[in-house]
Length: 153
Image (cartoon, rainbow, N blue to C red):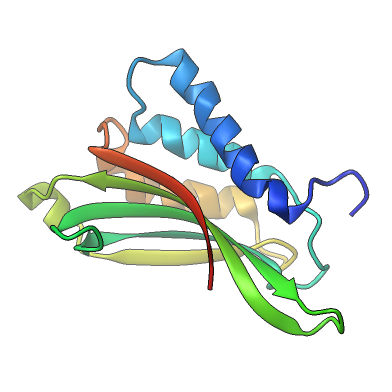
């Protein structure tokens, strides 16, 4: 893992990628946030060399996490955190949540989720292309809210 940033730097890396997009536009569209997430997804961090230590998740649906229902796209990176003995202790997730006011076109998308894990032998380009297809109806939209945070789970 020599030369890779530490997992603890992942939130700052995602913030920096979003700032690159924000600096280029007046408003951060879903497409711009997705481009930032793609660059973040390709960036490898110092993780254990196991198939589940570094995962990516795209999920969306209508949820009322903040009190009122909103259509939420959650772009997530999950890291496995091990204890001193090398055993799984917990996960840390880095989230970029894009929230949109509910409307029939978004409700029609229903809910969706898909995982990708680095070092699993799967093709990241193929997963990203498939996920972009799911996001296509949203790419030109500007989210009502964007929240970037980390969360131990």
